[in-house]
Image (cartoon, rainbow, N blue to C red; front, side):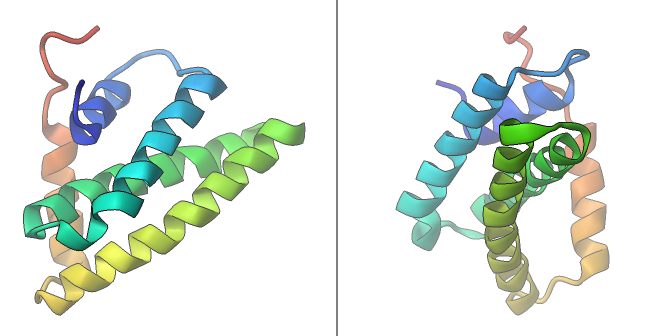
Length: 120
């Protein structure tokens, strides 16, 4: 199974948008991982999980604004829950001495990474 970070890179490099079901399944995997392991994350894990959380949160917010009905509400709830994790990880990085500018620079580098080659 691909790690969550590798999978988000695949999603970010796709031309088409994934279905609600796939998005929801990925979101649930992210929450499971965070709930079970967040206390054991080292600094690199925090960076990668913050990147995942920020991207899923941003995408969920965009889908909530574009959509209507039950799915839009579900996307909004997803974004809301992930915002708490983003604040948690951002706070951990701030405690480690990183600034907002450092985070933005690191994210720009992470966005430039290619998706894993063996994925479609």
